[in-house]
Length: 134
Image 1 (cartoon, rainbow, N blue to C red):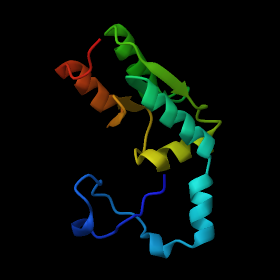
Image 2 (image 1 turned 45 degrees about the vertical axis):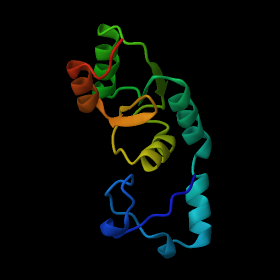
Image 3 (image 1 turned 180 degrees about the vertical axis):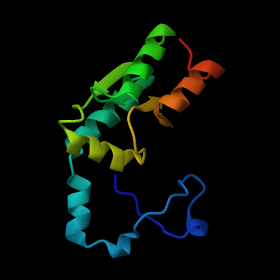
Image 4 (image 1 turned 60 degrees about the horizontal axis):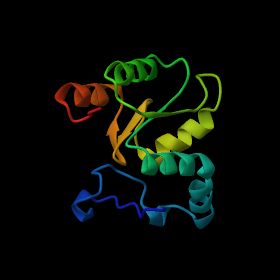
């Protein structure tokens, strides 16, 4: 799904993020097409997993915050699905596509009931306040 990027915050619908994007009129059609296709299969895989799992954790090898998130969920007895995309030394382009799609700049990326809640810090807070339950 391609979202028209609106640069003026006062024009954004209530449900949009107040984040600044390059306006679509400043993106050439060829570039927009490339952007839409950039590792689309990986983004589709994350979207499908997000839609079919209550809790989805997207991460990578060697990242200490991904390891902490997996351990915290496991220790709390929370069932989750984990998708891993490479390490610091591999698959950086597919991870970049996920970051561009979600807008979240780091891993892990944690989705609960189809919504991105953030990374490790946000997930840990949700575990502690009870908004993520077994």
